Image (cartoon, rainbow, N blue to C red; front, side):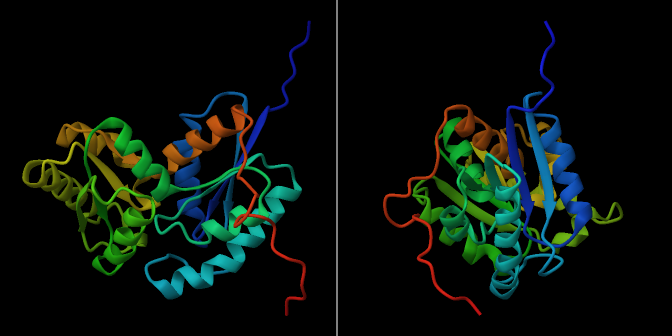
Length: 243
């Protein structure tokens, strides 16, 4: 009997910034954890900033991100992951997507609370700490979050092998464990996806990358046949003219 080679699940992994090399980094990390029957479409936003490090960046990234969601939906995507730690456009994407949509900060926080009683966040720039705090409260984990640290490394510098980024991330993760007694660490940038295991080995606690966590969560939701509720707020937008 011949076996079908058709994937049984298609997940759109959408990078809300326009840097294709970061999209590829995330795709490589995700490829190591998904089931053979899951196909991941790694998609780079075609309209927006090269990196997302401010409220303005987030706002300008959302129109292209939603366009990517609509396109992936039309091609048969079963679920969606928004791979920026600010979870930009998450509510809007849930209104227009048929399958489940998960943000990587949301996924990272949920995973952390399944692995211990507390967690800390290590992110890129200090100016983004306020957004991380907002999301911790939004998702209901303020009492679990011990601290949020910024290593003051711009997002695009994470790809530079000459940068001290990885050392700084390890230093702040160790500080969160030793000084704040965090049981786990959530990495606060999709560009850190490729070195979470390396950091975990050095600091001795689980270190969570929201990209791989997000994809595996969406994969599980699709397997369970679950979709976003459209009873109220996440119902499709009312038809109207857009200019």
